[in-house]
Length: 381
Image (cartoon, helix red, strand yellow):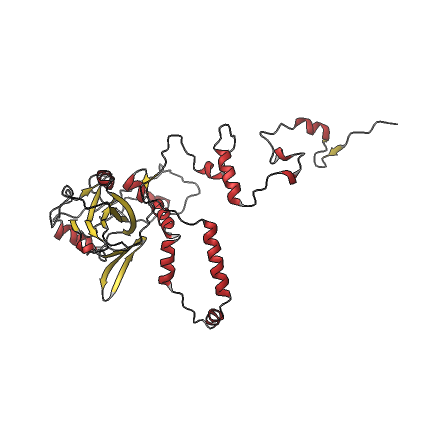
């Protein structure tokens, strides 16, 4: 019996032949283990089943921290970390909340009860159902709100610019409203835009506090210092606030309106609420009233916290963004008694390549780009 012939592939275009055996010999070894190679020739039913993504994620995170791993996750590839990176220190109040599974279970029970309520179904069909937004916000502030606010503040760089490597979860809801006249108010949330005209006077501040407690309220601007990049301007500082009566506290530094300089973009104005452990003498922080000196209002939140960290704990947070408007000019001229600084971006001169006598594939008005005139005519026609 004759030996079987090797299978031959013929390329119809060039007429060349290439045997399958020769092609297999030229293949290089794989660079690393193949996907799921460790499960080959194993009984899949005997393998460990995670049954949830959270269990798998915890196990994968545990394995990734071991030395000698050759793989990295997608997040580790995008945001590589260094060994010398310092972990964030939580300087706020400890908080022990229910687990996520318990919260989701409670939400499902509420949804089941709503589905079985005929009155809600009737109102929804007739489009007369009204959602109590105040109750929804109150529930959010107690359950998911503190963690959401902390993540938003991290996104805006609030903790990095004020506390360095420290952070806190705002456990006490802070409600701030600016009175804009005609029975209208402008609330301060977590990064919303408030104009300098709306923030010209001190706002109404409220928060939940037990009787006999003392608090400190701080308003600072980390983006507006005109001379020192790492410094801030303190706009309001009230200490020894009994309960939630802000007007009854000791006004260490009176309220100063927002004055973001023209051309500097949006500034962050940050409210921080500290809870005190007893009464504090703020004589070292006391400013004259009125205080219209920017030098005296130079401030650093980190230094302030380090000085009184044994007696104050950050508990509440709210901030807004503010950009220049016409009222800022009046603050510089009439209140600060100084010339208004205006910042402009200096664009580099337009670069034009050397002029050619016979330009190839250029528009008809090629020479307009070299014309000595302020009128831009090149590229219009």
